[in-house]
Length: 116
Image 1 (cartoon, rainbow, N blue to C red):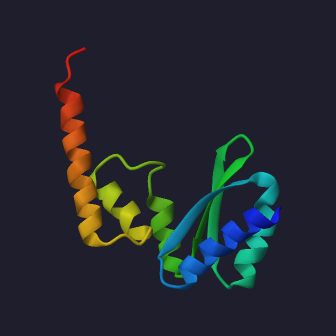
Image 2: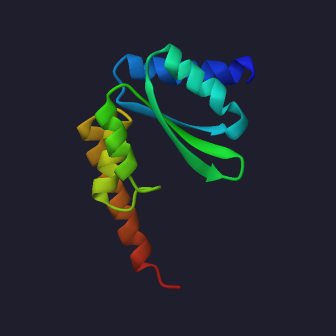
């Protein structure tokens, strides 16, 4: 793993250590052992699953129960609750999450009104 990539992983760990509930990053499968070693060094928990071909979705978190929530998440948010959970896990404020959901709902309504 090159130094830039290592720095990205360490920055994600630092954000979690400083209070962000969790962090998610796409990594190459060949980087997996190195990324796990960094998390273990920082005494952080992690989950990972295959994404596409040689890529892995890698979650970093401090509190074990956050891992339980991550396991329940869909691959991508589809409704208001999903958006709220993702936003909350990534450390966004309630106000910013609610503003995003409002805009998301408005965009969905506009898409439904288009005539093709």
